[in-house]
Length: 87
Image (cartoon, rainbow, N blue to C red; front, side, top):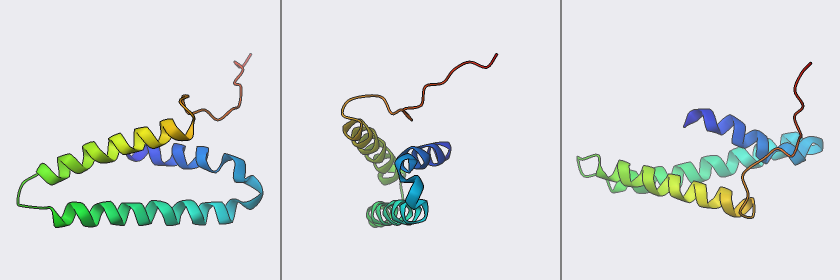
């Protein structure tokens, strides 16, 4: 799961080249805020079992997939750059 963050952050900031510092700050802020909120809720639901953690992973993964799908208007995420094979 950790390998996704770098790629998704890069895709999110692709259009922010001219204001990359502000873009990185905003993406970092929202990532941290959402992570803290989910972590707090899952921590409060902890009952000496792994059930809240599993439910948190399932809900977080499903929500992430739906948000990415919605943000791309039903398409697969892409950088928009056409790759050509090297000679």
